[in-house]
Length: 329
Ligand code: NAD
Ligand code: UD1
Image (cartoon, rainbow, N blue to C red; front, side, top):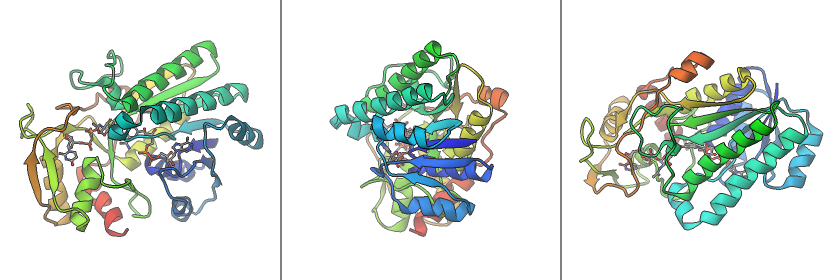
């Protein structure tokens, strides 16, 4: 298939491009590089030894998107492009609503116009809010407490309504849990802007000596050791989840959790990182981070049953590959 990947220069998109190219698909990337680097495109070529076409465009720009759809016959699109920082979204709500919602509308309109009937969308476990774990796709969603989460819930709804009105337009909504790690080559990975908000890049930057110590946000949650529990998933497993979602997409709208189904606490992740990589990480316990939920992990049975997909890589590979990428930067 010939696939348009928006946000393909970004963290998850770049890994998905590798998975697509290695499976024999052709890839066209559209990215405005607002949160990524041009070199990543060359790294994808280096890993896969395949060519990719790259357009540096903003996917909110209807004219540019129309030109793109005129130039290529796409079989499907994976839409990763968007802003993703929860804290920043509280301070810049209009930028977040504008970028994340308008891009989804412009791209789905183009797909319907040009009869590109496969649309894969990057959603987030954040739409479940503080539901009972494990989170199941059939649960009622909870309104997000931040604009970023709202944009994901709204984009899901927009795509569902579009698919209802256009029965040929098939949509797969993928709710990611906590993507971590990097391609095993160490050539591509995550480049957070400024001080990382997320746990794994924070740990790797302390390991590298860029940051002094990790702050563990709370040890009084009702969890195994009091620290927050999350479902960490290796970014290459996540990338492969996109490949099967695309290849097995049936008519209609389908929602899948992409996680491992395993919960891991902050201290468990930290200890695994220190053990596997043989590095000491300084840390201190501090107050809970406002807005955090105690526990999040996925029920992964739907993706297993319908897509025959499960995550293959464990915590050890996640911490090894995350460090392998950071240390070579
Ligand atoms: P990322 O910031 O690394 O990648 C997003 C890419 O989209 C960047 O390369 C950026 O330059 C590009 N982009 C943003 N707006 C654009 C626009 N208007 N036009 C063209 N390009 C644009 O983020 P990521 O971690 O790879 O996330 C990819 C998607 O997955 C996002 O939609 C994000 O919300 C979603 N998601 C991420 C996580 C996570 O933990 N990383 C979790 C759940 C969902
Ligand atoms: C964050 C986002 C969420 C997004 C998810 C996946 C917030 C509030 N939520 O969630 O919308 O879908 O990433 O990318 O940002 N922790 C520390 N110290 C740190 C950083 C984190 O103890 O310096 C803890 C957190 O309290 C949490 C766990 O580590 O228990 C994971 O945190 P993080 O990586 O930020 O992911 P989420 O909180 O799941």
